[in-house]
Image (tube, rainbow, N blue to C red):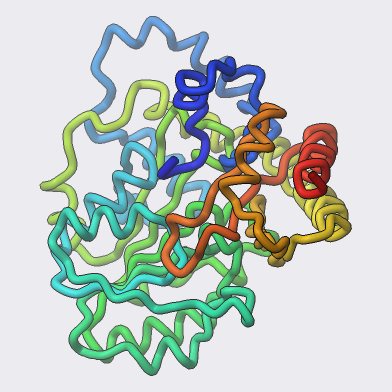
Amino acid sequence: MAHGGNIFEIQRNCNIHKDDLLDYSANINPLGLPGSLKAMILHSIEDLQHYPDIHYEELKTAISQYYCIDKKDIFVGNGAAQIIFDTINALNPKKTMILAPTFSEYERALKVSGSVIIEHLLKEEENFAVNVEELLKVMDESIDLMVLCNPNNPTSSLLKAEEIRMILEKAVEKNICLMMDEAFMDFVDEEQQYSMLQYYKEYDNLVIVRAFTKFYGIPGLRLGFGLCSNKNLKEKISKRTIPWSLNTFAGYFGKVLLTENSYVEKTHTWLKNEKERFVEKLKEIDGLKIFPPSVNFILIKILKPGFDVLQLQEKLLEKNVLIRNCSNFGNLDKSFFRIAIKNSVDNDKFLEALREAMNK
């Protein structure tokens, strides 16, 4: 699978009903849909007979209020993927630097645009964290665009805002645009120490990508937004965005965003408690290297000789468990996989299945 969470493909190919799968390949909030979202959809079902607001003014207003950002700097899309593709299409970079490993859609979007791609290799001995000093050394005038994912997917490593500002200052000097993907930032404790939302107006070479998919458990709704203070770039992006890219319910999501404080608090409480417990239990399983997670997913390396992720996937699938094979990420091989963090009951089931698969 090119991505995690493709339960329908597994259902078709393996004859396992999607509801019987324990999906650890997709990093979705296990708390499920917010109650206010369910109520909104039921209440607004008749609105499907009308076109959505083509400008999504209500949604943009809510995003602006929730994140304390300027409404005029917001553009929305069908998931973070559309924001990524539309931004790269508008920038049309000749040469782009990305991390390796990192989210695969950057490379796909860049290849569509015809950009030359330079991979900045992250080091396993540094837990695949970004070494800012080394990154600054390789930034030069030949690069038009740099893409950073924070927290990075699949490594779950995290850069502080002060480090990103150092990168941005160098990018300004070298005339490089920075696209910062913060799709998982809502999961981060003390987000203000890491997110660039509070600083975006200081940099006209910065585009921030955000998503509601993972945090609010709505991958099927498809909703993301971009943020940029550069008027000319926003106009370029707007010209390339397809009309009515969001459906009616996604357009109404602002009502959920502004009313779900309890959901947000419960999510952070769950993750803080379960992440620590789950990681410690994973460390007890022989033959695995656990990379420290910053959010709701974990990168793992198989150390068992003669055993790789393809074999592990097969053994786990026999137990109706899915993991994300990371061998198609740049700079990773068939010894790496990624898993989500879910509720304690499911996590215990997963731990038992993984332990058995590793010991066979």
